[in-house]
Length: 481
Figure 1 (tube, rainbow, N blue to C red):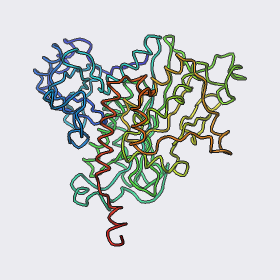
Figure 2 (figure 1 turned 90 degrees about the vertical axis):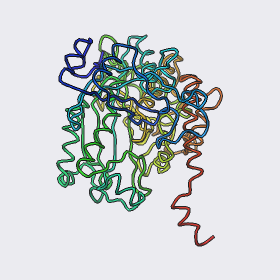
Figure 3 (figure 1 turned 45 degrees about the horizontal axis):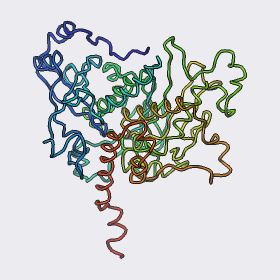
Figure 4 (figure 1 turned 60 degrees about the vertical axis):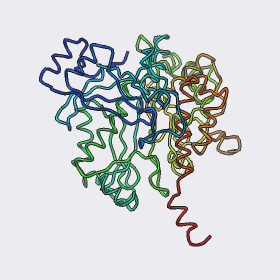
């Protein structure tokens, strides 16, 4: 099985005490539904007490307010006036140990959130939600593996300057459209290299790091690993990039679509399953490597195993009902509206090695058999990686359990008649409605408590948007109507 623990992570309390013998404080953080790290410093003594005990109290309001700390429009399950925004239990995960290189090398741990009454994960804890999905795989002796690729803009700004400019007329780090440029990285070489080097020191392994098309855009591919470690790495990568940027006078943004006339920022996710004997469950047998699997549903799936085909079918079958788990923000749908013109997948489509599809099937002959995997291209850089990975694996498991057939032909067969293409919801209001409807696939795989709570947070986001008056409206209507 893939290693979940970081290098040097303590396995016993004695090892932990020895690890912290020269420290006076520890930093801890958990993740809210928007994928924002919420944390604090703790004294070493308080931290050790929490680890040896039952965890420590953490205000539940982080599940009762939005990304800007405004309480939700209506009361939701976890944190509300009726329960007094009570404490929930933060449980330290010792396997996540690392030190923060840019913050005096302070020791750092992630926490998961538990219900104080049941001591079970609260329904919308991102780490707990993914852990539940992984536990299903463990019942079959499968290991969930994943990789995440982020695209993100950089600006010659800081939090004070963007507020002063009212988030307009921002100064990109570099000009022009220069994907894979060997020159643009020279303009900010120290910052560009620090991202890679500090990530290595922070135990967030990077596979690839380069400029992407757009002014000041980078793309970084995180190294493939176990799914929970991948989600941790993905969330911590944003933290480290923003922290390194602050020290260099750069403001990175993982907003999905900062500019209307430029490509958006993706958060593509790669997934596969590994058996207990180390075999890629999605790979065809050695005997089928030459001609492909004889009983494949389509030519495009000849080099995908039967289980892999069912897994793919499961994602396609439920994709319409889970879009808020992949595209959680109002702005994220602006990236999808561009569709083919901006490489953004916005339909129930798939294809062999196809970047025009929502799900790209990566198999031989374009890769080694051991690297067989699916790339889900719907999410933007604004996704919560725990929720995105959770729903991808849960849909795939549903496909395997039900032995589902792939519901649509490969995208290359749909190019001539797009009337047969099933489009995904193009705004958060519609996608949340499908997510929360009675009998949705989301309710089947995630449960009512999760769907009602998380769906309620998305309804709040929609309400905030509906009440907002935008610059576009003022510029369009102020004088002429």
